Every structure is written in structure tokens, then in C-alpha cells.
Amino acid sequence: MTPADLVLTPTGLRFMGRSLPCVIGRSGITTAKREGDGATPAGAHRIIGCLYRPDRIARPCPWTVPLAPGDLWSDDPRDADYNLMVRAPHAFSHERLCRADPLYDLVLLTDWNWPRARPGRGSAIFLHQWRRPGYPTEGCIAFDRRDLNWITRRITPDSRVIVPPLSSW
Image (cartoon, rainbow, N blue to C red; front, side, top):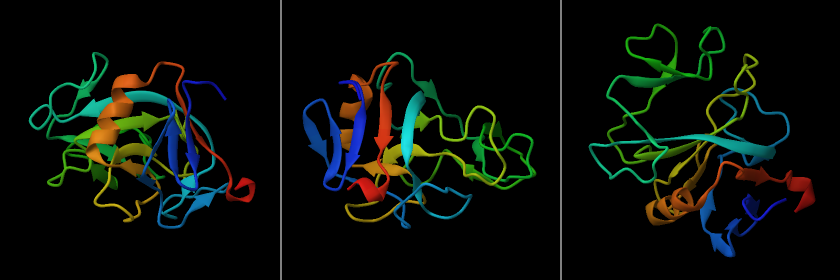
């Protein structure tokens, strides 16, 4: 591990000397991630990008990419664009990135099952805003809006999200 790493612990995510409250997938942590299982995958995941809603928040850092209303994320293992950002209309199953709620106003993308996705291994492990403390995700890691912004302003190209398997806790 390096000082640039974000490390998931039983009490939150440790980063730059702070422990930040967070929530993970409703099914906990897994070493055998599958599409739709609701689990957060164990491993060391690089942060490969950042998306934001320019109609809702200011650009959080220079390398952030703005989201547009037709932006989607393919979560269909049958899709040639599985686990990639796509545009509407899109014939395969997908998740809308410009949501009515604020969960994806700011999103850090990880390299889980990317860039060459293995069908069914799981898509889109994001760091994003939580619904509320203690409310689990579909497999992502979610934070209070202020903490997510704080993280985004401090990560580097070398930052990784370290998710230890539950057996190491």
C-alpha cells in the first residue's frame, strides 16, 4: 500500500490520515463478483476517471468529465459495450448516469472488470454519494457528499481503492 491508497476497513475508508464513513454493497465483500450480486469486490482497484453533473455541482477537479442527460452505463453481459459508458438510446440493459437523485452527481470510476470486461463478472464499481448513512449500495462504495468531494480533490493518478477480503478483517 502507498499513502495515495484509499483502504476500506471495518470502520470506514482510511485515506490521508482520516477515516471516512462509507457504505458498501448490500451483500458485503466478495472474491467472486457476479453481475447483480450486490457485493463489493475485494481487490486493489485503480481510480480511472471522474464524472460529474455540471448542472448540479461545480467541476471538482481539472480532469473530471461532465455528464450529459443521455449518458448511460451498460450492465448487460450480452452487450458488446458491457461495463462501458454508452449513450441513449441503448438497446441493452443499462444504468442512467444522470439520475433524478444526487447519488451520481459526482462519481469516481474504478477499473473493476475494465477495460476488457468479462461478461457476467460485474460492472461499474463506483465511488459515489450515499443515500444515507448505513444504506447499502448495489456493490459500489458510497460516502457523504462532503467526504466524496474531499477525496476527489486529493486523489492522484496512483490512487487505488483497496478492498481487503472479509477473511482478513
